[in-house]
Image (cartoon, rainbow, N blue to C red; front, side):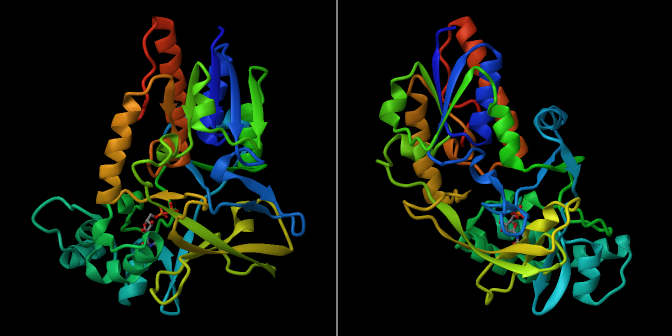
Length: 383
Ligand code: UDP
């Protein structure tokens, strides 16, 4: 196969799609502007403390997709990990996500599951139609008191806008339970790669059909010179941002170290509006099978992403959606490029979905080539 395929980005999307193409016999160049693979799930062992640090913030692998679970287990030894989060509100610590303990702690009650369900039903404000945004979803699910305490301030800090401007889907990421299960995720498969995500992605990329070029920033002009390019950089960057910049939130991490166990859990949320950060991550708790005397922590601050910042969360408000629709229409008219991943399709993607879509994109490419069809710009639609 003589195709000269360029994969822009050595994050999960580029690595997984690149590997699938290489295994099918294609030769693939994977280029990334950064000096390391794994994109924003990059992990690095701190030389001073020995702690494995999630450099771009917490990444917990969880999935309901057995194919994806089998896939990641081919490239890394996954250790059992169960994500637990706490939240400090007004000087008191509560369980997250909202569960029977949170409800009983917050309202000073000792309700059993059915009683709690009835109690929350009384507080809920279901509205006359299906919830149209984050706030309506929260009011319908849990009522005003819990929403204002645990979600309103946190969400305003995280997203920089009123929750009524955000899609309901953001809140639907979190379960709400009427028992004492405080597992942050509801998926059947959950774990942490023993040697970190960067090692796992490096193994995915380790194939004779893949040439890895780190520290190489590819321009769309250079990319077009290849038979086909998979672009996992920002969709708007492909067009030189000429119709405007799609909005993102970026994160600033204030790193500090401590001795022993500083907060007792991996992630502590801070929903109070007058606390400037959203959460504190204590990285050693991501590897409960290791033991370290010292601890590395990140205070996490969210703000609007400038041109030079690292994009983390696509915002997708009304203005972004109109701009996205314009870029997506133009992207569909392109030939020789497929847009992939969180930045390429401007969606809030979890790692497992990113992997599933990258596998699907490679399959779609292989089938299109075999049948002599044009390769679509999107295998997963951004809108
Ligand atoms: N959220 C909140 N309070 C919390 C936790 C989450 O308001 O204590 C909201 C917030 O808007 C966040 C969203 O729920 O962006 C999804 O939370 P998740 O933990 O999935 O966010 P991530 O870890 O992806 O940043």
